[in-house]
Length: 148
Image 1 (tube, one colour):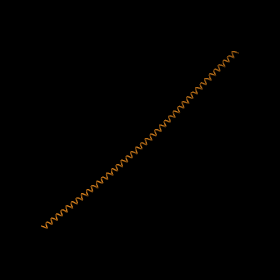
Image 2 (cartoon, rainbow, N blue to C red):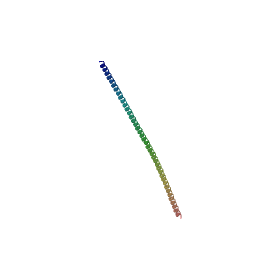
Image 3 (cartoon, rainbow, N blue to C red):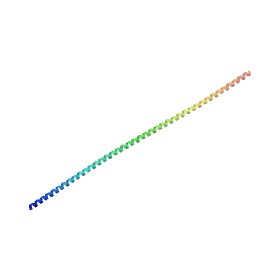
Image 4 (cartoon, rainbow, N blue to C red):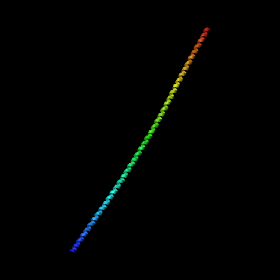
């Protein structure tokens, strides 16, 4: 009986040790799984952060490109504005020169007409004087003839 009791005691002790070992292995397995899950979550978070960083970088590059394009467009518009203004100035200058030239031509034509009129008047005057002279001479000749 004592022997049997000792055997049962030993068997019981062995079963408890077996159970403790199994529980320890389960605990270790669970800890290792938790560790792996934690590591996977950290890697996922790092990957997500890297993707967001890339996204942000891409957005800022697009923003910069957009800004550069806007500045280029503004510069081009300013250049076109300047060219238009220069063209208008040129056109205004040309039209002023044209007007001055026309005014000078009209002035010259007016002066020529006045000189023409003065010359004609002078010729008329001379013709009249010469006719009067001839009439006077004819009258004198007539009188001399009569006297004779």
